[in-house]
Each structure stands twice: as C-alpha cells, then as structure tokens.
Image (cartoon, rainbow, N blue to C red; front, side, top):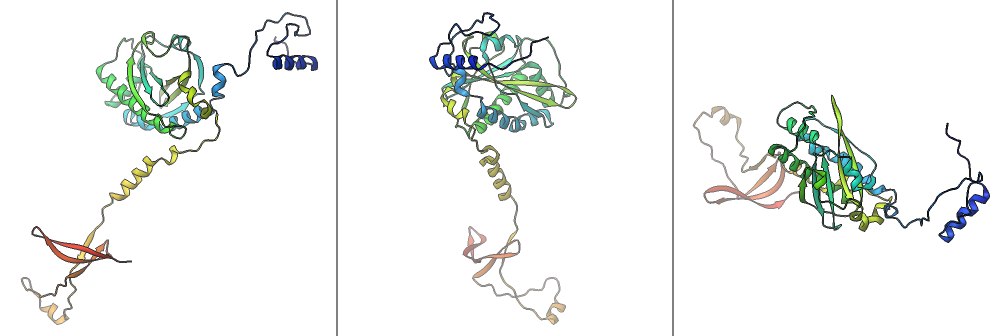
Length: 325
C-alpha cells in the first residue's frame, strides 16, 4: 500500500524557496529519513510549454469547433452527429506518430499568418463510414485491412478537410484571423513531412458519437512553434463569442428575408358606376374610364408610392416618384 503523503516541514519549505531564488537547489536538501534524492536544476519559465499556459483560449476554440463542425458531417452522414473535444495534449511528434496505425489520412495545411502548418488526421474507418453513408449506405464501421483510399474516398477526404479548414478559420477569427491552405496529403505517418520527430506538437482530439455505432475520433495537430507567435493570446481568459453571432448567420437570415415574394400592383383608376348600369352590364360591353398620369403603387395591399404611367419598349410601366409615409 502506498505511503500517505505528508506536508513539508518549515525547514524543507525554507530550503526549497532558497534554492528557487538562487536558481540552484543545494545538494544538502533531502528528506528527513536520509534517503538520497536525485534531482536536476530547473528554471521555471524556461521551457516551451510555459509559453502557452493552460491553453485556455485553444480549449475555447476547440469547443466552438466541436459545435460548428457538425454542419460539415451532416450532409455526409444524414444524421446530426455529437462531437466533443478533448483537452489539448503536448507530446513529441515521434511519440504521437508511434501511436497511429500505418494507414491513415494525414492532410498537411499551411497557416500563413502564423508562418506554420497544421495536420488533420482521419482514421480510415472514419473516412469509409462517411463515404458509405454519403452514397446511401448504412452507417456502420468496417475494419477492413487496406493500404490505400479509393478515388471516391479521396474526394470525401477533400470535402471533409475543406469544411474543417473553413470552420477553423471562423473559430480562430475571434483570437486572430488565419487562413488555412492545403499543402500535401499522406497516408503513412512515417512519410508525413510535418515536423522533426523530436519536435513538440499540440494534439487536439475530437470524438464523434453516432447512434448504434462505436465512437470515432479525429485529430488536429499544431506544432508548438506554430502557436508561439500567439502564445500571449492563448493564455488570455478574456474571450468574446464572435462565432456565435458571425456575419455568415446574419447574411443567411438577410438573404432568406429578401427572398420573400411580395405582391405589388398599381391602381390606375377608380370609376364610379351607378347600380342601374351595373345591372345592365353584359359580356362584351365597354366602359370608359379616365386614367390620370399619376397612379398609386401598392405593396401587399398597402400604398407605398406615388407613380407615373409610362412605356418602355412597348411595355406599360410605372415610374415611382414619391414614397409615402
């Protein structure tokens, strides 16, 4: 059974603080039981990981992405998937790639504003499920052993990556505007020219849940060097939710409103006819009316404009002259 943890004594705390101030812990510092303790000097703030803090802003971006990326998969799956984000993880690229299968879809994209790159990793069963569902098949996971994607699956991969890039640009917009451009695509992690094997990367994993199917995940990977230029922004905890009220939603609403059909008409004349004449009217009878130069223009039976009668290329028309309150 593990030994219960204990609090440091006053002497141990003072020795630790003294060592931190000097930057070099004294070798005489040891626990009370006299057992030897191995340690190495460490200066807080000197490592690359401290630049990004707890990735608060990146977690917010990932949460927004998980909510909005469902629109990319809805046309493919024909059902609304449930997508959740995992906290970002930092590891070396060698450690990450060693945990991948030998056959994956790995799309390398360029982020010009950050002078870096981004990697989108899709497992083959994920691609196969989206392809099968898109063309009328059942939503089920197949674990067939393959070494390459079909041309149809390649097209679906392009559609997915294009949608992911567009959604990511929207989600990053509140933090800093970015543009994501396709660079290359690889199917074997060993041949993915992304970063050096010893370089640190930030892995953002997302899990997709569908009815009656085991959950599947896909990853978005950033090199640590790519996010360094915005490290101060990634540490910030003050975030506004621009994506939720994005102009794209307003544009769609405005477009829908502007496409509503409205009935318009012009009232050319309102003659007054006695009842005795109306009773005598028969098919083929003619009635003289006086048409003024000015007429009223109606929108959904509401008078909106004064207009003038005219003609253009043999067609009768009205010219709006005055808007009525």
